[in-house]
Image 1 (cartoon, helix red, strand yellow):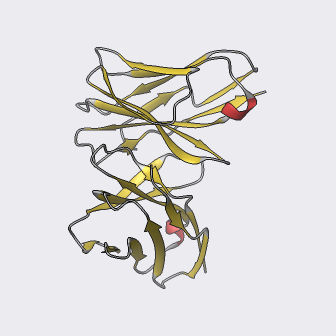
Image 2 (cartoon, chains in turn red, purple):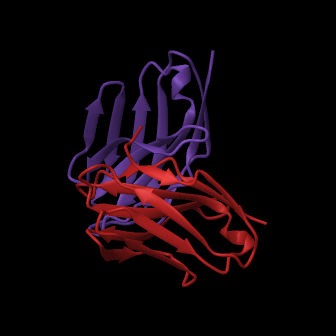
Length: 111
Length: 110
């Protein structure tokens, strides 16, 4: 158990809908990272927050957004969902950036 | 991120050593990593190596880095059935965004 928690574990929704994925980092970790794992794209970095501020952005679609709250938990919002958004979404957290610890992931299925 | 490549499958007999190889293209890579993913689980950080090192050993795991050839390997000594998993090679440069390979599925046979 890495200490990073993610909810929900599974999410099934329809195209066009909007969902929110939640991540609670390990105690004391200020950085949160979001990654997407899909069959065709593999594991891709989406976005990083540090102590509430956006620090780095990867291949994140404009339909996706994230934020980190004062209690350091983070949410990833996915809107106007398409079939191709079906994937595992991982959150990771770190104290030092070269030691990222991953949560168990949220499996999103868009039908 | 830059390209990270690794072979897709490795089959090894229980008790033997496993060697998983990875190549990367980003010459500015600062850290190289190995993560393990078991079925239905998240990624577990196994080990990492700073780019100015050429070897790191941690119990049954040995990481070798050839920076000139941009080649990273992970050796698992005395491979056990619990080592069956997907192993991801990853790299990051100064921005610490992880770029992953496609993963090597390691199957340990009795």
